[in-house]
Image (tube, rainbow, N blue to C red; front, side):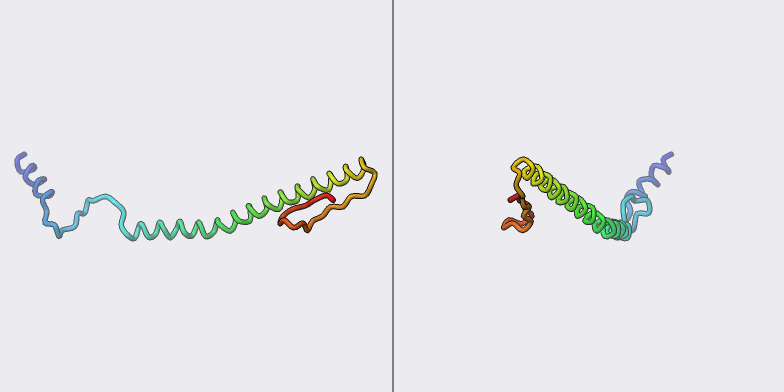
Length: 98
């Protein structure tokens, strides 16, 4: 038993230049590979997310124009006069019934 205790103490008190074979942790290669995989996944997914956002904006703009056209029709019927929908207003992204 005394020999086992001495041998375990000897293993703990190694010289500073010896490598520990049983150490836990990540190597530099592990970290670089992980970062490369994450970067590749981001490079693939970001353009698709941009397309989704652009589609959402297009849908919102379509609904705004449709709502303005319906409002112009309702106003023209109630006033019994022709109405115009102006798309090129001074403020960007604006539609107005004139």
